[in-house]
Amino acid sequence: MKTSKRLELAISKLYTAFHNNTLNPECCQQCAVGNILDNTDSWKHLSDAHGSLKLNYIGKVHQSLGRQFNGYSPLELLKIEHIFLTACGFQLPLHYNNSKPEHPTNKDVLFNGLSAVIAYLCELDGVENVMDYTKLFKGNTKKTIQTLV
Image (tube, rainbow, N blue to C red; front, top):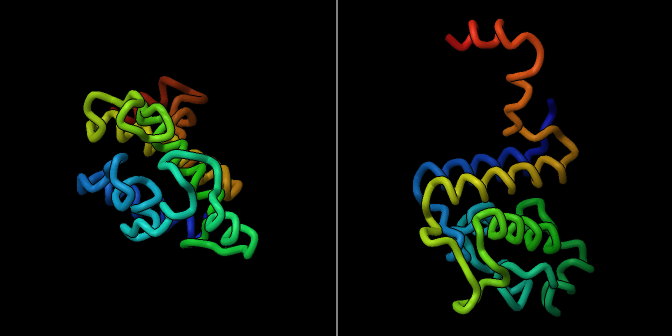
């Protein structure tokens, strides 16, 4: 399976952030997009609300000019963050009145968000989801179990 450089870099950054405990859905520098964009928060100026799918004026300008940030368009970045926050259990857009998970940096919560984002990143690049483990269980189950043991 051939993957793009942007996909490899994004997955690597997200994986590293997850394992280094630097993935935080409530921080624009440490959320999914913040990590993909090298822990910068400049992407937050593309929309008026964290978690929104709607580009603001600045976002529309960048989108219409074909601007890419580490290989992703402004709309793709908003969708990545939206998917991440939704899978983590946040009501969007982020707002102190909206519901959120009790422990937003819990590894299980973050893994749900990470898995959803990686599935979307793979979809964007037209490759199979690299986190799809169901193939391990297809075919001869007995042989698969013996191999694992």
